[in-house]
Length: 185
Image (cartoon, rainbow, N blue to C red):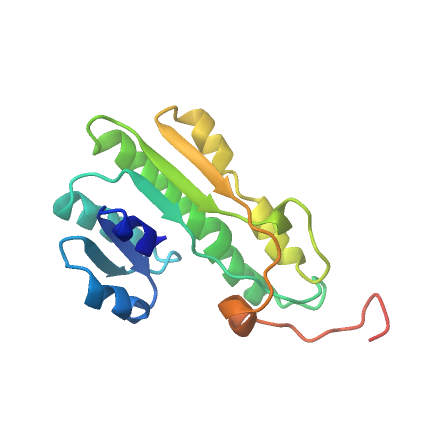
């Protein structure tokens, strides 16, 4: 998404836990067009600081692209609570806290008021899959459509991609050992 924004001549404020992941783009685009900030969505101070930075450096935000999240593979009964809660902190609360701050920014900072809020959800939030129960719940719990109804100045779009094969998510997804509770291994 960041590359697309930049290729279209716009300004991007890219937020991510590991800013070095964008070193290739940083080398290609000027700092006046590509702003890279470290942000962990489970940290409300990081979220607030990113929006304050945008206000100071750019003055307005037209689109917030909410993409943080990860999946967890494992039976619900065999998944430790702390592992599931951490995923909810990122997938649900992280998305909610970024979205609430975006809506506030669209209302209080943008002149004229308004902005677009795009959030990556998942088809697993609509059609739950075996061994992805907590992930499905964390994505189904996405109540951001309500934000759009509550604030007419926000154009909300939910992007719900389907199952991915390969790619970085497959390599980094936490996996809980099969417990064989409901079926033979």
